[in-house]
Image 1 (cartoon, rainbow, N blue to C red):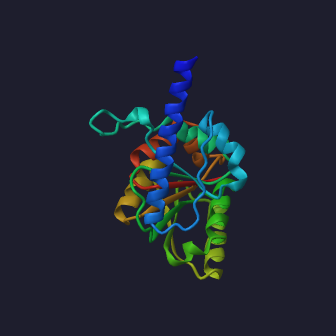
Image 2: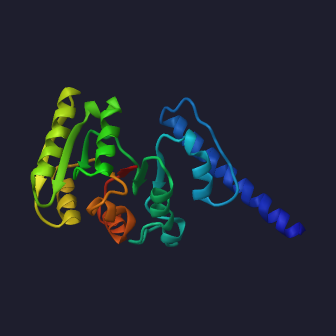
Image 3: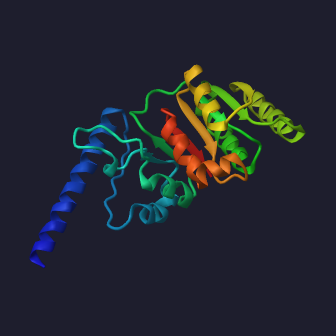
Length: 222
């Protein structure tokens, strides 16, 4: 029992050092109000309990078990990433590198309820107004999707957002990845739990593939 107590004490001290380091980095970046929270238990369960205090959850693309001794990262996505997206009723930002100043973002939009929620999120946060927004649809075009894109165009025009709409053909993941690279997109945004390819991106293996193959941060909105 004494050994276990000492081990727990050391783990608590290590966790506090990690939090202190994060606080220092946040202060260096200009944050003036920082709340530190040290809790026991599973990450997802704790975040669900705290979600009323969360605006956006941020999680690294790679878990600690996906990094080798030399610091290099594997191609596998951390197991907490998809679990967090599925469990938390808040937007989740998945990052794989230090987040830089964002001036060009892409919304993967297909007219589903999920992507409409993502559009509403953009519309309700004026910070997106100073960015160049790319509203991108990949797939077969029909009256329903054209009407949805027209609605999105009308909403963003009324808000005086700087945006463009792209209607593309091809494989969803590879087409969006190529578009992101070609247009120097800094941030990707998608809806979570839709009823077509956006649904598959979050619930199935396509989520891991999208996050794995795209080198930009991805914000998933529920």
